[in-house]
Image 1 (tube, rainbow, N blue to C red):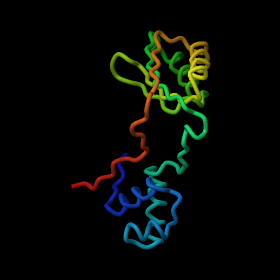
Image 2: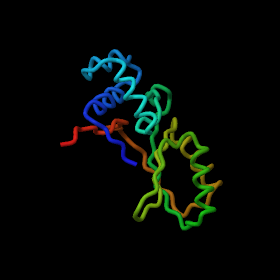
Image 3: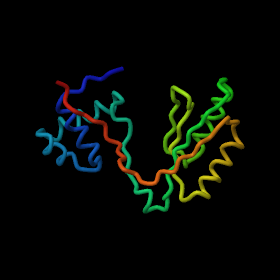
Image 4: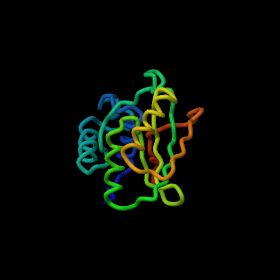
Length: 157
């Protein structure tokens, strides 16, 4: 379902993406409105599911999670039982930051954040003991060039 978002909503969402912890007064001032209409719009966007949750972003390196692996998974299993076990295994592994099912030769890609290569191997060994996987390729990110949670909320023309 697509929700109708106007220019003011986009400005509010942009501010929330920059810093969801800023005050309503600050957001209202930056978007050229007052506090009550901004609050009402935020509430409506939460109720509609446009805003799904509010959280904080942490610096992985500052917390000892220095290694980021992109894990490419190919499987020969595609039945519902295997998929349920695989999805459950991913949900239970806190190292998995993102998981995507893909079109093409690779079935899944995971973004896995761990302290080091040894921790990745522990993750890998645990995963393959839980579910049968045909092929796994792990790619170590040498440098994060860009990472964002911001959607490009450009105004519609």
